[in-house]
Image 1 (cartoon, rainbow, N blue to C red):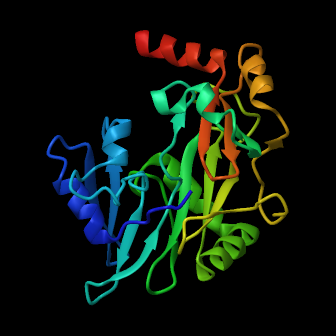
Image 2 (cartoon, one colour):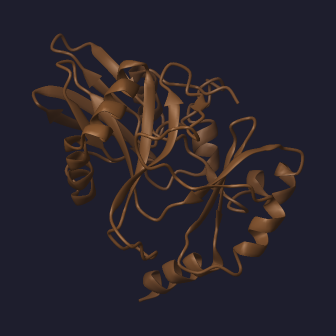
Amino acid sequence: MNFYLPSYDDCLNIVDSNPNLYFYESKFIIDSYNISIFGYRHASYNNFILPIIDYPNINALELKGISFVFNDSGDVYKRYLMLHKFWELDQYDHCRLNKFENKTIKNVTEKLDGFLITFIMLPDGTIVSQVKNGFYTKDNIIANRYLEYDNYYKFIKNCLLNNIQPIFELIGDKLFVEYESENLVLLKMRCSLTGKYLDITNIIEVPVVEHFNYSIDELLRLKTELINREGWIVHFDDDTLLKIKTDWWVNEKNKKLCS
């Protein structure tokens, strides 16, 4: 999979080309620096794959928290990624089970039930945490405190200085899954220049998401049996990602929506 990493102008064009507000820009000022974060509302698969009709080479898969930090002159200082947009098994026709039969699984990791977190560096070297829609949420304020821990700070700083994007999940503030304690867990690492996902199995500086050797058939069985778990992310060799969620988690979510 070749990742299309949009420029700031590309993101603006995607927003302007979708008058139904499927995609949007949020602007922030952190420590006197301007920051833009792009996100989406109710965008469908086709909106992500072809956001600008006349430009089939452009997709919006990164508009799930991609951010741009500007320097004092108003130019883009750095672009920071999160996870690219991917879908759940059977959510659309393109993610039916038969679409993955000939793909090789690279790894299977737990789908944690928390808040997606990344970190960005400002032009003056300050590092701050970011969620996909901003900076001022309760979960992001908690995540930012992890920079006070030497192991997290050194690891994150080293990643950012080497064009590597570390992506975490903050767990512990109960959504549906009960965790024993709060934790900030490394989910993925991406090359900021190419979008390529990097191996994290040998990382020891910070907690890393649990990896499994399950097949798709095993996951389809486990999803009907396990409780107190959201599910799994299946990562294939071509960097396609797929979510498989447990029946328990889906039922818990539906009960909340209906209450």
